[in-house]
Length: 476
Image (tube, rainbow, N blue to C red):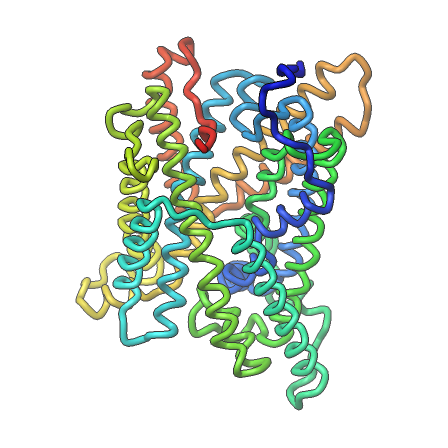
């Protein structure tokens, strides 16, 4: 039901056009989104990154339709937690919300891991584990000062990324068509019978979902969009389509330049090596651009996670005296920011150790050299990405289920258009979730079990007030 405020009450202006919403979505997701995770995708899928990106795009398109439709029903909120809690039941909403907390906490963590890996490429004399501590401290200190990234900086970053993408495409075209090298098979990135395996493909696709993380943020702009009942849905779908096509082209040319049968020096920063092979000056340019992109993402993700914990603390879901505290000078949830920073640094080390022992036998004697190799390894980013997608895919399944119940099951008129998108979106996301790696599923299951126990205690078996997982509004 729409609430009408008095004429004198300030209201948000509906000034965002469909193009503004799409541009916002592309900026949030980033036009270089697949470059950071390309090496991990190629390694997991033994090539076939293009196919994985496109399959993930189909899943996200169906889910985007569900998000757009749910934004009509709840124009003042854009949270999967809200949709599921109201349309399915509070307990399912809590599970969805807890999976969102996992996403928020892991995002700054994997950005810390990636930035450390790229910085190690620029300064190999400094071990990667030192860079992890450095970026964790920098993210925390900046957020404690209350520094906010403006829309102009975001737009400038998007323009810079766009220019780099164009430069990569031009260099790739010259390398592929003009430079003398072995014959290129233009269909191999889609399908290579020598390396194809369904398990590898769907495992790769489960990680490729990371490319699209953030598209649901468009739904939070419902109160500022022109004709939101139409434009939010269109913008969400078109953003996924634009990012999907752009991402597919980026990884397609990368696989033509660097065949999947050839290992990367570092899977975390693989795209920098691809760009450097196409044109050597691009190696530092792409690396620096991706470092800036992930730095911005990590910085923003940390304050987002801190705000979510602050909101939970303010509503007494977490200890209010600690998580609900706000610094009187910077107006920043100081304790929550520090907590997320500590989790990011400690978690980055734990991820490296867990991922490292997938390579080294459990019986290997842990010498300092072995420890250093593990800390400089690139396996942690992939494991962290899968753990993040563990929570994201649960949220996506929840939104598809909520849309199905609201617009088809409870609707007086049953329409096929309200049945197929949420059902297909749910089933594809479920398939991708089941194909996450075993370590990611084990850690994710532990996280969810702890959350369910915590929620059951706080709500007396989910019979009390629902724990709030909404981000609190920013104060002026």
